[in-house]
Amino acid sequence: MEALTSDLPVYVTLADGRLLTGTIDLDRNDLAVKTSEGDSTRIPRSSVSTIRSPDAHQAFMSETNDQEASANLWAGAIDTALSASQGNSEAQSINVGIRAARTSDRNRISGYFTSLFAKNSTSGQSVTTANAIRGGARYEISITNRLFTFLFNDLEFDRFQDLDLRVVLGGGLGWQLQDTSRSAFQFFAGGSSNQEFFGSGVRRKSGESVFGQEWAFRVNDIVSVTERIAVFPNVTNIGEYRLSYDTAIETAINDWLSWQVTLSDRYLSNPQPGKKRNDLLFTTGIRVTIGEGSIGSIGPGSIRVD
Image 1: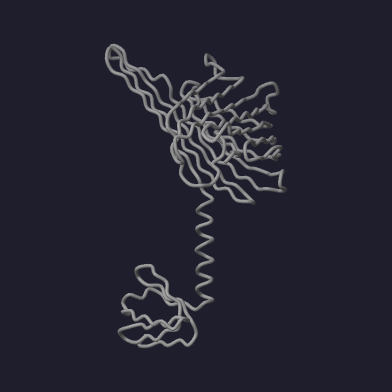
Image 2: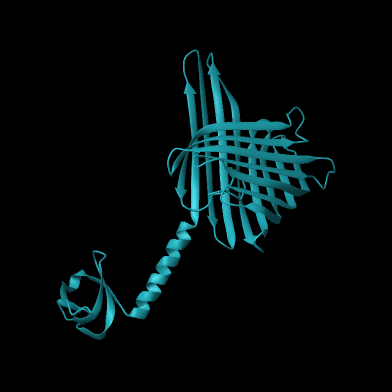
């Protein structure tokens, strides 16, 4: 483009990020911008990034604001804990937890991952004492201010239950019974399909109903508590069931750093022969929070008091 002249105000973005508004006169070397106050600014052509009409600038700003608003809907947290000892005996323990969620007025996407690995060594013999991984995702859509529907997928590995993989797919309806600035409580119910793969070669597939509740409470500006319990009665083998319970206490150090104590329990009424029915994970460590949105309660939860 050799030259450009505008008798109507346009928006000029410079390479350094500055924004000028006014009529323009562009030649091969320079751009002259005359504002509505009558001031004139001459700029090297090489310093001009974009020139937009008012309509084009408004559309650009609207798209930018939508992208920023969408990004602000995301939030996440990373939990870490590490312990080690050396001497007559050696022990190491590593715990990692990750949660992320995108929450809008209409829907919610959330995911979680947690792992615990521990071993100790005495007289040169190394023994693994904990090795478990849990993760999953959940999608919710609001039907009314109180009622919502959800889909979820949970995955689990537990070496000491001889569980190579558990895959659970399900969904249902939930009801937000309470939602205030300090506390929130919801009840949910639905159904799921459960597939279990054990190291012994046993494969089990069953249908389940599911019901439970979630609760979140802010004690004060520093301490908050979250709790979730879900029961999975087996509808294929009547009398069998699973239960999951998760709770956490979070103490804020600043806006992005806190100390967390988490308890995660999994109960299986029909474990493999020789295996215990209950597995309990207790972890504590620092939590780093990223983003300004709502993360959700522990595990595949969906509420949080902010």
